Length: 104
Image 1: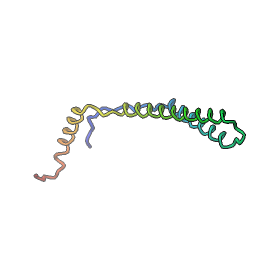
Image 2: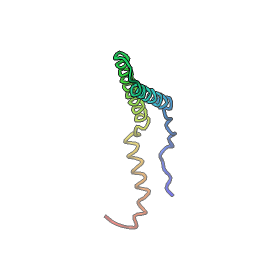
Image 3: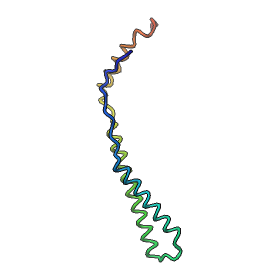
Image 4: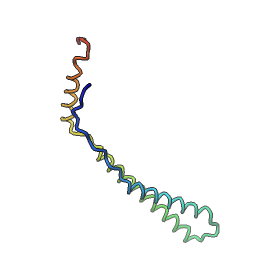
């Protein structure tokens, strides 16, 4: 068995608050869309204000989703390339006897 020299990394915490906010914003957009589709006697100012509110909510969802993606990408950033190269070389050296005597 080959023991990994890689240090154990703790699991990255998921931004649950951001995901909860995304779900709530999605629900708000769905409710506004439902209200727009069910009302027939809605005046022009109310119609445009609902459309504007929906567009603002969609923009907020996009900004929040972008923030979540940036945080998760930064949390999963690769380790130092030099340390990774050294670890890979050590692993290959440990696997060298397993080649079965093949010569290249």
